[in-house]
Amino acid sequence: MTKLKLKLVSALESLEHPDGRKRRAAFWLIALLLPAITGLVYLLGGSKYVYVHLVYMPILFAAIVFQVRGGIVAAVAAGFLLGPLMPLDRVAGEMQKPLNWLTRLVIFILVGALFGLAVELLQHLRRRAQETAYYDAFTSLPNQNKLQVVLEEAIRQYPDGPLKLVIFNLDNYIELFYTLGTKATTSLLLQVSRRLHYCLPQGTDIYQLQTNKFCVLLTPASGISEGELLYKVDFAFNMEMLYVESVPVYVEISSGIAAYPEHADNAEDLLLKAGIALYAAKRMSERYCYYQVQKDWTSRGTWRCCQPFPVPLPAMNSSCITSLSTIWRRAAFTVRKRWYAGGTRKGGCFTRVLSSRK
Image (cartoon, rainbow, N blue to C red):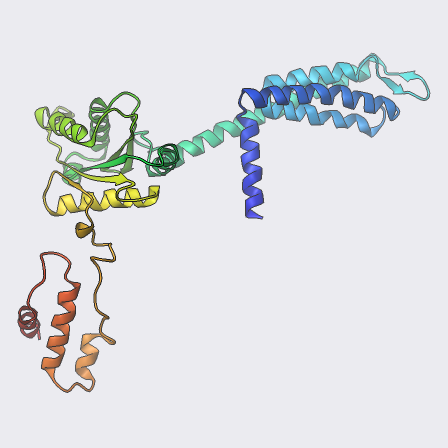
């Protein structure tokens, strides 16, 4: 049922935004339906029978594809086809009065125009909803949802890569936010995005993942490497300060880089690996960092540890324990295996720490 709904929605969207071939096909379909329905109404007895209402199908279809103008044109054509030459009752030989078919013509035009107007309004509302879903409300930059779509399209376009995803983080954003206030920091974000645009080739977009995180996707068509981009960004933000309400502001930026297909084979993982590289750069106080497995705390190889205690340590102390030194040795072994930063340490070190916290 869900797949059927998705196909129906996709079909409606393709009707609302047809390409040239689909528009021509829709035009010829409407042009065939109108005389076909006119002939059917004539053969079935005339315009006084209910079959005359079949003509609303091409009118509404024209309003969906061509909006108001299409609905009005189809309505006028239908009104004249079912107008003065169409008998009211073909068997009795009774013709329509001018008032009858003119009234029907006006109704057809109203229906086509109003339905086309409703379609245009729905399209406008849907575009606004898409802007809300794919663009940031304050900066109007494309957000993470839009980046996911663009990443998937880029992977389909360049299945062998290389694609580079670079995430920039404003490290001192929180400090600036509480110092300058909401309105000023919004202006700051706009200035940051504009300065990032100056560092990029024309046609390369900047995405705002979070309030203080921006992202750039580099493809083979971008014409710039990640090294050149990092150099330009570093030069742009270090050589000249930003001014927010006449106050000079220095922005600290760190970066994380991940590559397709070297580090990930899909859009979601590539975005995740770039974020992990950014976090590693911040943790090591570096300006930038490429994704590396040994710096990935989410990697199975890094976060491999022995099985945990079957019960919490306080519960073990209150249960039947033969020796406290056994607990210390077991805890030291477990903590050492779980220790993923700073290298491994000797068990005695952790034993002394545990004994001091007894």
